[in-house]
Image 1 (cartoon, rainbow, N blue to C red):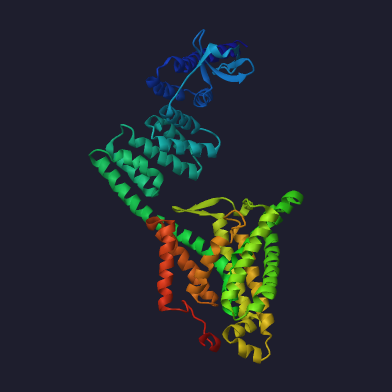
Image 2 (cartoon, rainbow, N blue to C red):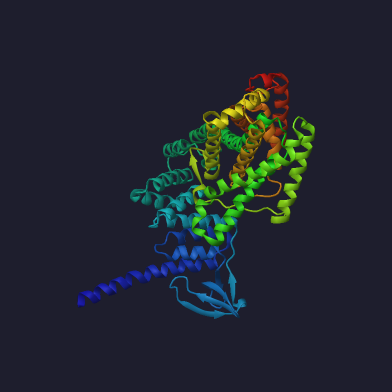
Length: 530
């Protein structure tokens, strides 16, 4: 019993000085001048236990005050009639005072960065890997040399590979701001340069100032990273171009077969894409209201519905508007332009003129890193989806009886009619299929853009450009043209801007058509050659 009492007394004697030191470090926040606060923050962050993190968090949030009566630092919470005070060291209530009885400890942006770095250093020992990773990244940005002991201790016992890599970068960044030997700093520069990341450039920029081996190594590392990033940026632009190409492919592939088979300039094609987007919106609204558990499957449900809605609209347009105007392309163009205005106004009356948001399912949300490339899942799935639609259409055209008849009508309508093919029905069904594919395109485009009555207008001209450039009626030409124009457009944007880049692409197509009027892949046949 005596031994137990002696042990308890010893523990109390050890705790009391530690608590006194912590209390004095906290109270120093209230008495220090602005230019001395950073040193006090670092001293407080070096104290053990959870109290420093609590105090620094309250300071960053503007909740740390000084009680005027005794200059004691307290954490405040606003309540009716005054402030409720809490002792930051013990966590006990310190009563309630009026607003005039306390004064706020004010900080600036530099101190906020110091607080974040100090909090990061103390969070390196957190049991949560996510918090340790966040703390390591905060130290990397702050380049605080005082965090080196905490980083070294954390590295010695870190088991998570991702956190360990972040800690090594934070250690290298902190080394550059320390008084360690130049050999260690040069090794740290090599560690930072090996990442090839743009995140380490500010760290290396600080070390590159002045003369000496360290500055020379830092400048060399910066040059190497910038060269590497230039290639990664080109790769990122190529990916953006492929993504844009997939959008153009979806919008144009339906137009390719209708324009090729029927020779009809359908100015309402963009509005058929719009109908697919609104079909997706309606499906998601029904699912949200009646079966929210099916939301992740909403796009798969919307695909056949959008196809049928757009196909039926296309069939009606062909039967009522286009068929009486066969062989009169100018009248067809004007008539379908009028249809596009009717469809836009109808959608405005039903859904209103404002944009409608179509949600992304969980499997199409977020992004991942591939080297220095950032790839979003919705764009990745859109590229895959556009290729699936393309190859499905290719299979229909080349492996089915309907596709054979459609190709026969494309090459020579009169001869196809002479051998018994019902060319009016083939034309109608082809127009319906092309319109349905436009509806499917609307489902895909709804994942990267809001749905509005003007959704299709931004893709109509681009669709015609793709079809003409690739070769009228040739879907392989449509694929090549869509990807080519998408990549060229995105490669031009960093140098020429978005508007001028598109103008240059248009000029390129005009010059190309002057040399090859039938596009990249011209169809062959007596009717085509006539």
